[in-house]
Image (tube, rainbow, N blue to C red):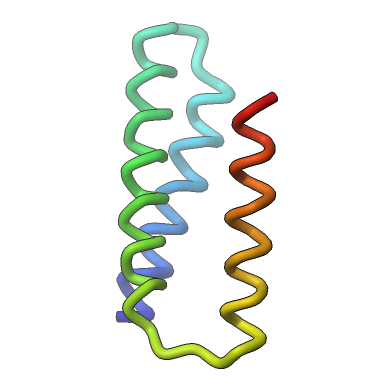
Length: 72
């Protein structure tokens, strides 16, 4: 499962990098959608992994920050 998680995170990064470089709106939009799908898949895998209390706290903090960033 860790290999799948790393692969989804890598694909997310690649899509975001390529979207930033793309001069075409349609291509950029498609890459951003794929990156978002990869992020969602990675988060689903992470949710299935056993974690300790500290890892749970870090994850909650990350989710809170991302929710706050989306509101702005």
